[in-house]
Image 1 (cartoon, rainbow, N blue to C red):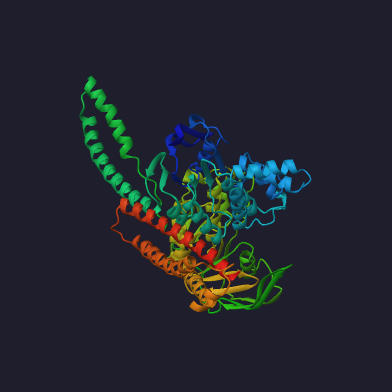
Image 2: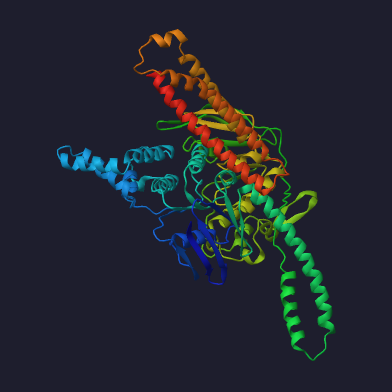
Length: 624
């Protein structure tokens, strides 16, 4: 069933043409991701679909009665309302019924109103809905429902807007970078939520694992054209490579044909027949096609890093705490040359505070931070770049110097550096205030790297960057010979570039884990299973004992049999999941094979979640 049809939309800002003549449709149950470079107009497309912005031409047609929710990057909400009031401010009929019921509970004298509200709760099955929306708020760490929106951080506002969108269960949910401001636990919960809920999604996201596990179709906007791929991220990568190879072949053919036609044009008679005029028109079309080279920038930065001495950074018993929130407690660590550390943990556990202390932007309450004499920091923070009025892109880089030293005595100019980070010569003379959010982040990265650091600290560098730029950054970091510390919620990014992790557990507990993020998740999952087995062992009764006890709050024979079986079933499913995930690495997989594996993996994840929930239900009966 078609929910939305886009017909020949276009959008420009002055002389800058973002896109034109774009057409596509969205059908029920599709989970579509839009991929494009920063500055291509992704957010403008989302705004047009949601009705927040009008196209310069073309139209968007919705199926009658289609309910749409839009998660913006910077949601607009009434700062005077509380979290709960914001949720109830929607037009959702079930939420209004729950609101009426809660009002009736606070006014017990009005028995008629209470009875009416109670019956409405039954009629609309609102009891389950109430449980579900409170669970969503809890998962997104929005537990204080009376907290005013005006007191929330930017990340909390984004999570509240996401919760509001999920709770309303729209026919179409439009998402602009939904994983920004979510910690890793929240992102993985959201993946599972979308896997089991029949929701139609259209999103822009840079999170490639999220794309892999949630989306069943990808649309790429490249060179002003839309290219649809009926599969997840792995399928997209395979088919895009095949498309580029085909385009290279076509380009070569066009050049040969152009040469042939050029010879004919030079030899043609002055008198032009109708046939020759037609051929001349064809020649101009061939020329345009032959000269339409792809502007792909393969970034290979070889910056000549300042030499590092034997002493890097030493942390001696450093402690840091805020009121009622300990961050560090007698923490010791000495960095070695070439170390690559990823930092993960829930929001609010002190990751950014830790980075500030190392970079000298903050002081510990006690302890010492000893920095080697040769250490030169490059610190990328979440604040981004400070925009000066009237400043152009090239001027921002030249503030740090005109040239950068490369290996083997070479150097590149500020202009060449910008080109390597996907700013062409024309873009370099644009005003900074005209840049998109992702382009500003890309420019900020350039300002950090041009300073030739040997110790890079990156705090959420992947936010708002497109996938093309992420690949550029990853390539640079893989070749970077210095030390690296990075905080990121991008699991794909972390898996590629870090060797070990600092896991911030909260309450000043920091664990040093030897491996990348996928290694860590595999270890954590094995620990959960081990704890379940220990719990089952400690709670189990002998065969004769449990029969003699009162059965008031104990398991029936059938439930006991199910309880003993379910753990083995969960383990089997986990093994199947690992096996299925490993199958994705087979380079001989076709697009259909990848789509089938994705479907299979989704079914396994749903089965694991269902059986785990049942296991907890039975465990609760045993404990009572």
